[in-house]
Amino acid sequence: MIGLAMLGSSRAVHVRLTKEGVIVTEDEVLAAFAKSVTAAGLGGGSDTQGIGDDAAVVPISDSLVTSVDVVVEGVHGDFSFSSLKDFGWRAVGAALSDLAAMGVLPVGLLSSVVTPSLDRFEELGAGILAAATAYSCPILGGDLSGGPVWSVSITVLGETGGRPVVHRSGARPGDHLVLTGPLGAAARGLELLQRGVTRHDAPADDATAIERHLRPIPRLDAGVAARRAGVHAMCDVSDGLGIDLDRLMHASGTGVALEDVPVFPGATEEQAVGGGDDYELLIATDDLETLRDEFARAGVAEPIVIGQVVQDASIRTFRGTHIIASGWRH
View 1 (tube, rainbow, N blue to C red):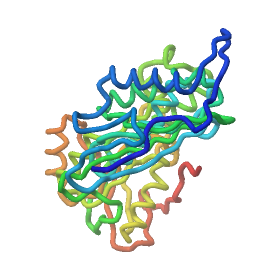
View 2: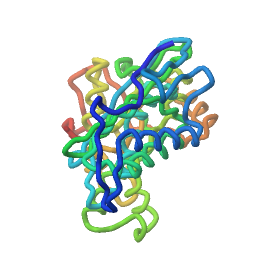
View 3: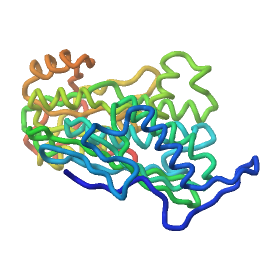
View 4: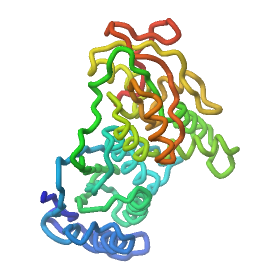
């Protein structure tokens, strides 16, 4: 078993006064959130000790896979068109995508929150809870502290189940490069939001694009299916295809010749290559048929072939033209 930090506040008992003049303490806010977690059935299994002790205890039978992701107000979220609930969802979705890229499912998460407004934590917590519920991920604990801006750090935990995970470093010359879906939706969504369009008054494709920006979708089922298919390498396209493709090729010591990039309806090819925030999976495999079969068995869309891995590590081409490692840099 592994022990992890519990959900709690710092040693000082912080007190906030709401707009209605009601005194709210961090302990009260955390107790309410813990109650919501329990009600949602996200406290973990019978052998798991989650929220409510000095540390969480999670039973695992094999290697632990863990990753941490942080979102910060003004960097990863603009509250002029994004809600705190969206912000909480984004934090969880982005972190879970790292597990998807390794081909494993989550066994739990820890959330650490910095808040300038304690009386609004419930809204943020609702977003964390909604995403955790959508992807069946227990909330095991975390921390809460006051600070100048909103910040959410999510640590996710997965278990290998006795099979090797998929790394970035395994792509081989001759492998097909595939994506789990078209790119550019999130960048298109951000563009629309900055123009004052909302998901409630937009046409279907634009509404989906806005949703993809506000609430990223971790491709967990596709990642597990790809792992079952024995793919050679995989990563998520979180910062943009240009830069994430370069990372996968660099880790593998290979080059790439792209033939096509699937573009989400309404987005531009530039947004698809360098926009970021798509969270589709980029996969290298020499066995397309097995990958297609496993995707079909998992009920996910057929993978899209975009190019081929080549021997020369200096080659980075798109339709014969050299491509720059473009994308989102924090």
